[in-house]
Structure formats: structure tokens, C-alpha cells
Picture 1 (cartoon, helix red, strand yellow):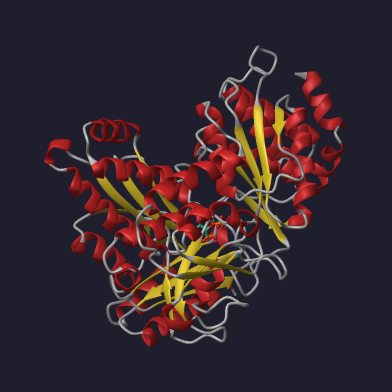
Picture 2: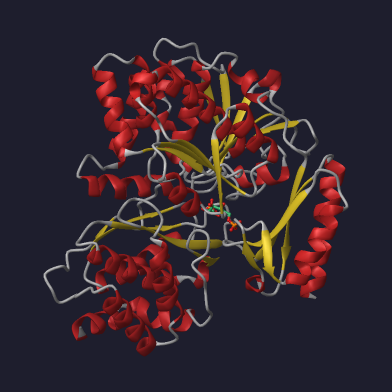
Length: 540
Ligand code: G16
């Protein structure tokens, strides 16, 4: 399609595309990430691909979000949202890498032609009516990247919904794509209405689980959006204070990633008095962790309620609801999905304490989400606080029938499903879910904190010249390459008590991640540090 390529190459972003994308980038755990100033060409090309994907889906909307989530403020990223509201289908990731790595206009044209042929997309046919929804977080490089993405979308002949001002949390954009294609209400206001209605009905007549809550917004976009979902929470008696609302640096000494990895209170959140609950979002509000106690200077007094603890709270409540449905409801396939980072105690609690099925996948919500789809009802969480629950369409239909026949448990589960973001992990939705579930669970916050004691663990990261030298297997729990490094890890693990450890390349940062668990914190720290030394030595 000559006209299409002329238009693409004539756009202002196209020239930069050629200069910027010399290096081979991989699509990674959650899209392309690097310094925001080096992403113009990537954004332009991803705009094109999002448009082509929408056209390939016969005009169903797709999405493109400009964010680097938990990464530092100077980074940025481009993440594509597929027609079902989830992450870009994995079979298209290689297409994204092919067009981003093309070295010049001719390569780009050929890469696009190959994608069009492979996916049998005819841009000259009657199927040109693609639509791409856009969003960005609060990073300073965001608006320029959105402009480039818009040029790419238009060059590929699709319509753009959104602009350089469309600040949204990443999960809001995922939800909007899903809702648009479902043909229902799909504006930002509709997202708030849905959450608020369901949350207020879940909290109606309940005593608030906590009287006050401090939310660390990581100086990100969540700070702008959180107040819109708080009416039911505050009406139920929980006073909510927002911290790190934009005055400081994004994700710096604050946010979910900082709190989970460092186990320290985020800045601007002083020691929490009398068991008061805190929560931290990450920069684009797709992750949340909770905490009690602690001090900004660190220390062992921070009680972290991470993604694993959230999963256990929600799974326990859902299990009781399913039991409440009774035998006449019929069997319910109920599963929990975790990654290798899940604390061993949480997996034991789910399997042995609750008797639930646990599936382990590779890191990245796209993998957890895919595994969760196999169940009628499922909850997936990464330890870092990224997760949600899924209700299959057939299970929802059965719940509606049961509610029609008077089942209060079915009605309650349906209300829960309305607070859930079915597209992706969502900090706003999970915050409401946790508060609602706590208010329904005997013992509330104290019981939640005491569900299990975390096995001592330590996570470290090591900067290496080429993280792609590491290849893994078995949900990333073992390295297939370099085999010699895995052998060293095996030896070190064998030398510690109740230990396990793994090494994997990050999909979002230029680092290798190391995770170790052992009987004592000292042993876990030592094990992680020894492995870090081996990794550094291997790459030196
Ligand atoms: C992204 C993914 C998460 C993943 C995280 C860390 O999070 O969406 O599923 O756990 O990266 O990935 P890695 O260890 O490969 O760097 P976010 O919040 O940055 O989008």
C-alpha cells in the first residue's frame, strides 16, 4: 500500500524513527522500556502496530499506554493492549520487535509488509476502520511519545481516541479497551461509577475494617484518580489520607516497588500509629501493597502485606463464598496463580491451609492471566502486588441464575465481580476489594496479618552487560544457560537450610534479578549476596 507508506514516512516522527531504533529492543515483561528520550521512534512504530492489530481484529479497538510503571522517572515505555483488554497477544510481540528493530525506512516497510502478509491484513480492503485508545502516566517525556504514537496510528489508517492530555492509570486504559469492545459504557466516568456502585453495596451495613488508611501514590497518576473511587470507603467510616501525590519524584523512595523490595516505609509516610494501615501504589497504579508499622529509615518492624498476602486474603474469602453457594450450585473450578517469587509460606497456606489448587507461571501478569483463564474462578497475584481475580463468563451466568433463585452468596460474589478489573491488575480496584473483604471477614486486619509468617527472603538485582545471556526454565526457577552459574546456585542453596533461590533476567530493567529464601533472614541475605557475587563474577 504505497499511499500508506508515503504517509508514514512523511510524518514528522518517521525520520526520528530511523535514528532512534538502532538497537535491538525486546518486548519484555510489559512492553518496551528504556530512557524516555530514546523512545520516540519506538512509540511511532508501536502506534502503527496497534493500528494494524486493531484492523486485523476487524476494527475492534486496541490500546497503547505510555508508561514505565515502577521504573525511575527518566525511563518511559510503550505497552500495547489487545482487543480483549489484556496485554498484547504474545504471538504479536515478535511483530513489535521486528518493526522496532528495523534500521531504516526500507526495513520498516518490509517488516510491516511481512506482518500484514502473515496476519492476512489487507489495508486496502474494507477493513481499515481500526481504533486505538491512548493513555499516558505523569512522566515528563509522556506527551512527546503520545504525539509520536498518534502519528503512527494515523499513518496506518486507524482512528485515535485520546491525546497528550489523556492521563490514566494503566489499568483504566485496559478496562476502557475491554469495555469499548463489549459495547457498554466505556468512559472514565463509567469506570468510577461501576467501582463506586459495587463497592458501596459491598460495604453497606458493614463496620469499616480500618478507621484510617494512608495511601502512598508514588507521585504518580494514581494520586489524580484515587479520590474518584473513595466516596463509598469514606462513607463507611474509613478516613483516607493521600501521600506522595506529585510533589516529589515519581517512584523515588516511595511506591509499591520500593516498599516491597526495600521493606521500608515510603517517604512522607511517618511511622504509622497503633496498627494503622498503609498502602502503596506504583507509578501507573497497576500494583498495590499494604503495610503496617515501620519507619522511613528501615528496620524489621515493617509488616508488609504484599501481593501474596492479598492473594491469600481474597482467596480465603472467595473459598468461603463458594462453600456458601452449596452443593446444589455444582462444581466450581477455583485456582490461584503465583510466580516463583511467591513466598513459600503463602503457597503452603493456599495449598495446605485452604486446600486450593496453585499454578506457578513465569513472571509477568500476561502469563498469570493466561493461566487464570483455565478456571471458573481464579485469583492471581505477583508478590510485587500486581494481580486481580477472574470470573469466567459461564460462572457469572450460573451466579446470576443462583441469585435469581435467592442465593445471597451468589449476589455477594456478583458484587465482588463488579469491583474487579477483569482486564488486568488494578491498584484502585484492589484497594476497594481488600477494604470490602476485610469488612466481611471476622478478625479483619489482625487476622489478615496473622494468616501466615513469611519465610525469610531477599531480592537483589545485579547490573550486567547482557542480561539475555541468561535463559530459564520451569517458571524461571532454573537457568538452562549459563549452566555453570546454575550449578553454583545449586551448591549455594544446598549449603543453606530450607533454602531455595533463582536467578532471572528482568524484562523491564537492564538487570538480573536474584531471589533467595532460607530458614533465617541472615541466611536468606547471605544466600542472595553469594549468588549476586557469582552472577557478577560470571559477567566480569
Ligand atoms: C511489570 C509487569 C509485572 C512484572 C514486573 C517486573 O510490572 O507488568 O508483571 O512483575 O514488570 O518484571 P521484571 O522482573 O521482568 O522486571 P510494572 O508494574 O513495571 O508494569
